[in-house]
Length: 201
Image 1 (tube, rainbow, N blue to C red):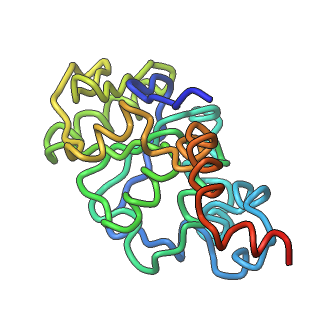
Image 2 (cartoon, rainbow, N blue to C red):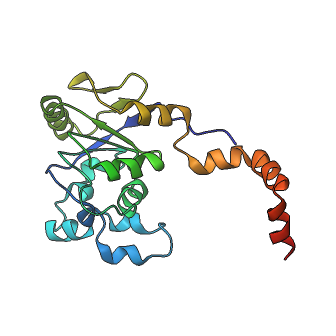
């Protein structure tokens, strides 16, 4: 099985303004009782969207089909629930561009192959304004070059070295790596005397 390298994310973007948006808002706790993550996407920002009565960015037809979510500071703070990036991924987002991200949220995103990139506030504001003015435009997040391209221009973004390497090499995909090394795992298991004992008990 080939590893899934992620070098660029290109598509339409959605702007979600506001700082310190926590994981409780991204996916309310009552939707964490599910057996699988399959349905969590439909509940992304459920309470915020209900309160907004159809005026939330995720319900704005101009942003329909967006792959990139543009956010503010400290996005994904609060509890460490992995349901938050799962919900956003299953809603349709493959990448996030913001001023900063909560460390655990960013780590959970990387484990799913979702890209988190940061921009200086002036560049972020220019990107937000450009997307709000022209939601149909294509935004390109280049992991290799560490740049964001939009009609506001091409600017440098920050992706931590280790994260960038994982995305480019496909080592973010722990399951893929395990399957890739299945033969090695089997050989190691056969060499361990206690594995056969357990299998036969």
